[in-house]
Every structure is written in C-alpha cells, then in structure tokens.
Image (cartoon, rainbow, N blue to C red; front, side):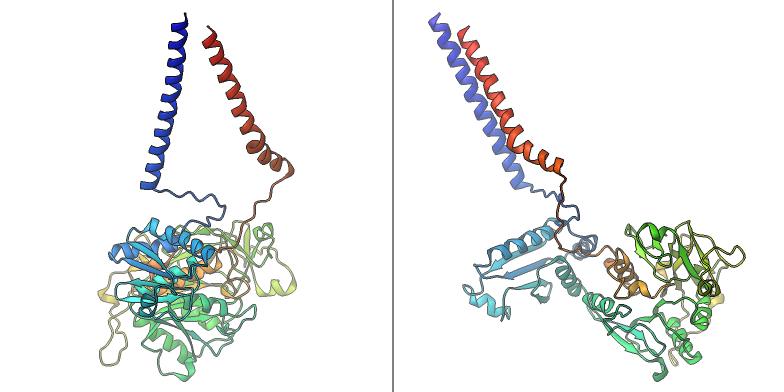
Length: 487
C-alpha cells in the first residue's frame, strides 16, 4: 500500500512537472512567433495608431518604384518619451512598407553623422529617398507623409487663384478666407499664387490649376477667353460658385457640361446634424477618383445646384459628384428674400440635388506657332456624358465645379470631410491621384467616458473576479489531489 501511494505521488508530481514544462514551452513558442511575426492591433476609437489611407497610398507609390526610405532621427538621450513616441510612429510606416528603415542618433555622441546631415538644432528628423532628402522638426503622421510626398515629386506645381472679382482671399484668416486651404495645399508641395486676369495676356505656362473661388462679379469676356484658351491647352480649373451670382461664368461653364440654375438648396436633413437649412449635409457621392471610398459627411453652406448636362457635348465627359438628401429642394432668390422656403413645384427641384460635378475634355492639339487649339472635333469620337462609357480621368483638360465657395473657407474647411473633399479635388486636377485619400487624423486624445455601472464592472473584473476565480480553481485542485492521494 505504501509503495502504491509513493507511485501515485510520483505520478502526480511528474504529471504536474510535465504540465508546467508543456505550459512553459507553449509560452516560449508563442513569444517566439510574436517576435518573428509582430502584429499591431489599434483599439483606439479614432484609429490613432493606424496610418491613414493617404499615408498608405504614398507608401504604395514608393513600393511601386522600389524606392527605399531611410529615416534618421536626431534626439538627445534624455528625450526618452519623445523618442518612444516617434519610434511608435515610425514602426507604423515600417509595418506597411518593408523597405522603410529608421535609426536614432544622439547628436552629442555622434558629431560626425550630425554634421554630415547638416543638423544644427534638435530634435530633427532626416528623411531620405533615392538622391533626395528632407528635414523636419515635427514628428507626426501628417508632416511625415507630406515630406514623403515631396520626395516623390520632381517639381513644385503651381496653383493660381484668380482675384479681382471679390473672390475668397488665400491670405485672409477671416472665417470666409482661404488661408487654411492655402496652408493645406502648400503642405502637399504645391505653390499658391494669385493672378489678375485683366493684367495678363495669358495664363502662365507653369499653371497646374487655375482656381476661381467664390467670385461675386462676372469675369470680363476677355478674361473668359483666357480661361477658355487655358482649358484648350489642357489646363485644369477648379470653380467654387456662389448662389445668384456670376451668370456669365455659369453660362461659360455650360460649354463644358455643367448645368446651373439661379437657386439655393434647402435641406431639412441638415437640422438633424445641428446645422442650418441652407447648409446641406452631403453623404451621397458618385463613384469617381475624387470620391472613391469617401465615407465622410461634408457640408456645403449656401450652395446652388450644379448638375451634369443631360445632352451630350462633343469631346466632353461630365458627371455629378455629390448629392444632397432626398428631403432637400431648391428655392429662388425671391423666395429666399421673402422668407418663403417652401418648395415651388413650378420653379423648384426636389432632392437629391447635385451640388458638385466634374468634367473632362479631349482638347484639340495645340498650334505650334500660336499655342492655341485647333478644332478637330470631327476627327474625335463623340463621348457620352456617362463616366463608365468614357472614363473621365483619361482626358487632358479637367474641371471641377462646386456650388458653394464656403465649403473651403476657413470656418468650414476642417468640418468633417470638407477639407478632404477639397484636397482630393486639387489632387485629381493636378493629376496626383496617389494623394487622393482620407488625410492623416488629428493626434488629439480621445478620452473614454464611463458610466457608474461601467466603472464598477471595470473595477470588479480585474480586482475581484479574476483573483477570486484563481482562488476557487486552486482550492478545487487542492481538494481533488488530497482526495486522490488519500484513496
């Protein structure tokens, strides 16, 4: 009997030891797999630790070009917290693009490398790709992605903003100014300049985009001719209209497939979001490079309708981009002034209403002597107004028209998807499709607010339930073994 009990104790002890060894082996194996194949889970509500679609697109471009990226971060040894925050961000880029590498250098201990990279203040970060490099001080996703974009671009593209007709000013920091839009445009390595068409013989050859932002009076016929010549040579134009203004400009846009009316949109749905009846909330977008995978709401304050022409126009393809809700409608200027916002069945239009459209033109070849286009429409097939029959993004001249100039104004630029929609339009017009995406998110903290009951649950699970469970399991195992040995 004594021998049997000894064997049982030995057996149980051996089984316990084997179980412990197996458990440790599993833990070591899991640890090895995790180290060899690291995986990150972003549990923040705003996706704070996940790269934005735009950043991923930029990295995809580097991957397509097989262009490695090297980052050297110059941080003093004492800046431990800052170094770890930057390391976490750089890890996100490296997880997406394998050819992304980084290293940290203490500028006081490695003076040779510091001087070679022309570092005179720190912290500083040097980003290298190919034969080019850029230096930045701020270590956030927006700055780093914009820096990578600069390294991809061979030249700085120019955007000219028309002035002289009461347009929104890119220098103004007022609510109706465009200083925020200008700042974001320049972060994408574009250069913004103003131009007075009445004082120039032609739009400069280096113009990538001509922007007409909220004119209050019509351009002269001679100015419209300059714009037409610019389009005929393959230029890109962004027009932000105001309701009940610039009828000549609206008529000019008809030649490129845009139908507008002397109206303003009223949207009952905007009240649901805490807005004004005259600030429609846009959540419906037509599939197009500018709006592809675009899932953000945008706001169009004081917007007029901008529709794609139903009748085909030779060498022009056009389509709507953004639609208001079904519970919207248009009213006339007389109705607005009288305070009557009800739908007039005779003059008004029921929603959904198109408030933004895009057009592209197969421009005629340029005359080498004069630089003007020659009419060769008879030699070109007549495209349809439907984008799927003739892809818009294959044409040379590109035009985007929105019925609200305030969507890009300082007051509304950062409201939900307004800034992204505007910048996507700029990127498409500049033929920088790799930049069309949702921009990097703000790094502002997202506090978690718990109710009283939720707080009790959070306290009870780790402090009470988990320890109590282990105690109960221990007691059960102890009693089971004691009974087994006694037997």
